[in-house]
Image 1: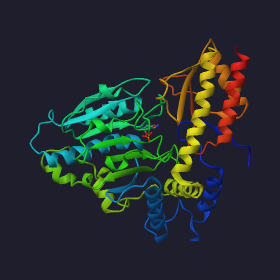
Image 2 (image 1 turned 30 degrees about the vertical axis):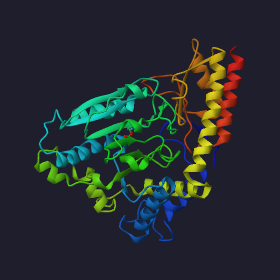
Image 3 (image 1 turned 60 degrees about the horizontal axis):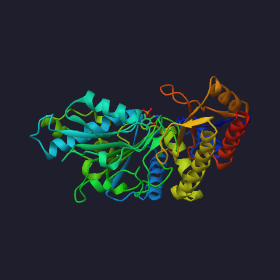
Image 4 (image 1 turned 45 degrees about the vertical axis):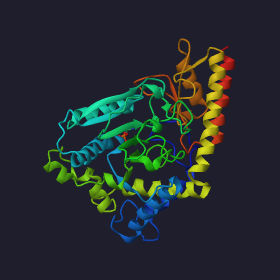
Amino acid sequence: MAKRAVNFGAGPSALPDSVLQEATQGLLDFQGTGIGIAEISHRSKEFTAFVANLESLIRTQLDVPPTHQILFTQGGGTGQFSAVVLNMLARHRLLHPNLTDDERVMDYIITGSWSKKAAAEARRLGGGKVNVAAQSTHSIPSHESFKFSPDPALIYYCENETVDGVQFSHDPSSPASFPFHLLPQDTLLPIVADYSSSFMSRKIPRLADHAVIFAGAQKNIGPAGLTIVIVRQDCLVDVDAAAKLGAVPVPISMSFQTLADSDSLYNTPSTLPIYIAGLVLERSRELGGVQYFEELNRKKADKVYSVLKEGEQKGVFRGKVKEGHGSWMNITFDVLGDGAEAKFLTGAEAKGMKALKGHRSVGGIRASLYNAITEEQTDGLVTYMREFIAANT
Ligand code: PMP
């Protein structure tokens, strides 16, 4: 095999070599059936057992309680921007049939470009009104600035902003944590979280208090084409009954209840991405699960933030995010000086480190350190950054 680059891309992103090698076997012969994974029926007993095992790998590693169902679907994070609005508005309609659209409020926390896009989709779909409950750029909003509505249809946040590099802290005592303590404690809260770029990278704080958690697979756990949705049972609602009361109709493939009732096999699922995600999470289980990755990812991020700070002190780099609010998964910074960014990227490529260019909308550098990036590969980046600082001061 040709030497593989170290891929610091933000998604689709690096997958473990061992998994990719195993998957090439599965492409030819899935579990001794003599039929490849891209060819076998999604209703075969081998495949349905594989899906059930994938469900259990996620449930066990994240401690998903029996109050919540795990669904597999398609359409990516963007599909869920629509699906969460439609399902949660339907739920709210069944609970409060007589409210006007203006009285049916959806609270959005805007911390970067993905939550902004999600709020724009909610506005586009109609059927309720978007309230920006808190907003900030390059940081998590201060707890005091949150203004939650009294009985919203949903409360939405993006746990990790992949483009901007801002992430909620998983430490409840951090000022960058999600302010669960400001919400009522005694109700089934309609909290919706986009975990697309941090899913399975560490434990999910207050998972049981969420109505919906969703993630596209293409960062930490597999190829694009699989979307994972963790839904609390009370959010699996009869969307047609809600539509009869005036709610926005929900496409059948987006109805959480339909997906749940069919064990995520209402229509043909993304069999190959499901297969690879299963292999990735089996490997993750063998290594010690999400806890293992939490420790590893903390170490990796600490190392990069630390050299970034050295570079800031020397005037070579400038971090884009407030200290303590930065993502463990996507570290964003600028290289200061004319032509310096291009020089940094060219030098990295020469060392086999690719896809470090920031998102086209914001520029700069973005190093994505998803689960498949090893500590050794991270050390390679850190060494290169240190050499770059030395050569430019
Ligand atoms: N949310 C976040 C946090 C993301 O990083 C992305 C994709 N990078 C999306 C949503 C959109 O996901 P998709 O491209 O799968 O629709």
